Length: 119
Ligand SMILES: [Zn+2]
Image 1 (cartoon, rainbow, N blue to C red):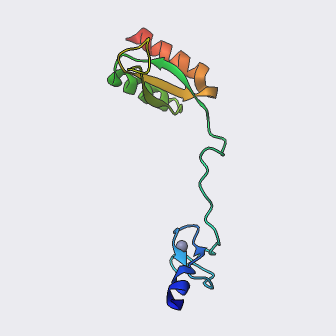
Image 2 (image 1 turned 45 degrees about the vertical axis):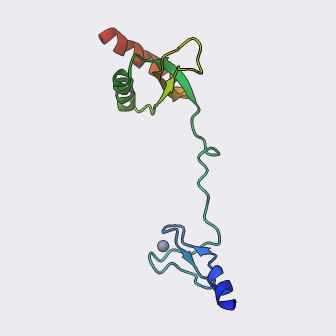
Image 3 (image 1 turned 180 degrees about the horizontal axis):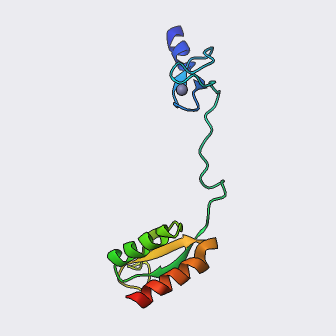
């Protein structure tokens, strides 16, 4: 009973290794970092993450991938999300949609238009 309680008392964490350690240990034996009582939760939403906006839809995933690669070469991260299908009355067949960060939208649009011209 008591033994179990002690085992539960592993409330120190290494911020680097994410290992748990027993209370009382101050430094991580693995990397020497100061242990912390709580691991910082990664907060992807709370950070200044870009809001992705819809750029365009494409004929197929090959073309979507081609646009994605080109945008990424221009340091614009982008997402491909399927749009259409039963949930979209106007687009009965699912096709890939390209999403880019809001602040990169204008830039992305230009790049995309150039691509379309070149095809
Ligand atoms: Zn460590």
